[in-house]
Amino acid sequence: MTETFQIRTKDMPAEMGVLLAEYPRDSWNGHPGFKEKTRHWLGAHQMFRRLGAIVRSDAENYLDKERDARDFAGRLSHYGGILVGNLHGHHGWEDYSYFPELSAADPRFDAGLEILEKDHETLNVVLDDFTKVANRTIKLIQLDEAQARDEAGRLHGLAETIEAFLDRHLSDEEELAVPIILHHRLRG
Image 1 (cartoon, rainbow, N blue to C red):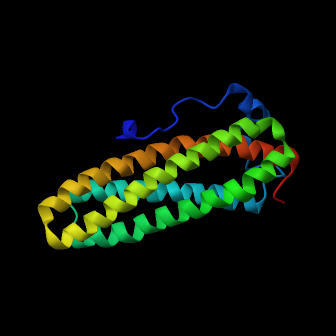
Image 2 (tube, rainbow, N blue to C red; image 1 turned 30 degrees about the vertical axis):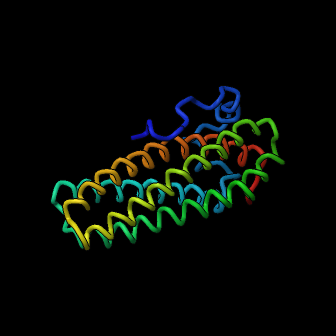
């Protein structure tokens, strides 16, 4: 399903990893500049990864008739709503507050931040489609189980797209932002 959307498949430009070489991921936790705000930001990313996996897995279980339709609808409404709402809020905050702070600290990485902002725009389109299909699936569960299963198949494809997108985007975002934070001792 990822071919439907213009999801970035290219690596970040090599020059964006210049600080990552100095501050590799496995050293972040022990760095004195790794403060609570950065831990919370990374924690939000982990939550998004878990929510994406839950939504995908629930759709699979429903399609495989291992999850009851009403249970699936309730979980989809709950976890899908949390995923979509929090991703929109998180990415809006990054675009308007977090990324400008990183840019002001180290403008060498503006090209990478622009790539991440474009990712956010693409993800917004995917999330809007996901929301429409999820809402339709929930309605159809009440009206026509066969049509609900067809729609849940589309939903599953979108959930896979979101999960793949988040895997790529969040890793790139972390590996660009955290080294800037550590290098410039931001977010303390």
